[in-house]
Image (cartoon, rainbow, N blue to C red; front, side, top):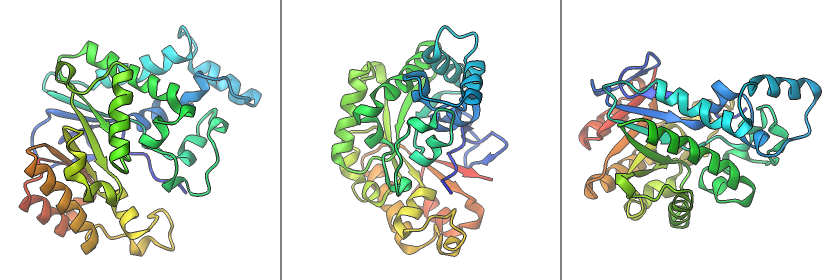
Length: 294
């Protein structure tokens, strides 16, 4: 069983499926992976390279993209328009996260046979590793086009979020790739944030922040990788504990690094009320924003 893809459009503080420690509706957090799953239903590569599909799947894909000039246009316009429709007058910033889904999740979409099989998808080609690969260059370009279209159509500050940054090489690589796609960090104030999904990112947050403008702590995935636990595996479910000392240490280290660098932090976590030690830590370290799954 694969990870649940992060919620699609999260207004920090106001969407029904979330609660927050802030009353502001100024930030909209967007997961492109979630948008793909909820609004497109097809693998991005299906509109880049026509896959061998069953007649039923081919007909389904044709129906989905019907009316668009081509598949790529449908991909970009559908996702960008969905994001723009959720930007309110009160929205000051829009954080858009590139796809963080693993190969198993992508394989479940129409055209999913274009996804390479991996024995261990959770620890496989995802995040920067995916977008830096030759096989996914065009997929990355499509997601960049979505971001550029949103930037051009709103006065809100559109910011980029990069998931699964595993090391400093990832950081340098993604900043270069963004520049090649016409999204250089700093141009017209463009900010780029990274996600602490794995322990290495939290431990090296101070160094990674030299490449980025802020960070997001995904407590759910960070807990899984720290404890070596797949929370979707019922046999291991009782081992999943965001309040484990190791997880608390990593969360604290990442927040302190951001505070020292005077850069913003956004924390995403399931069920904050059931994790009082996490809540206490966030309050002590003055994490700026919290997104909480209800």
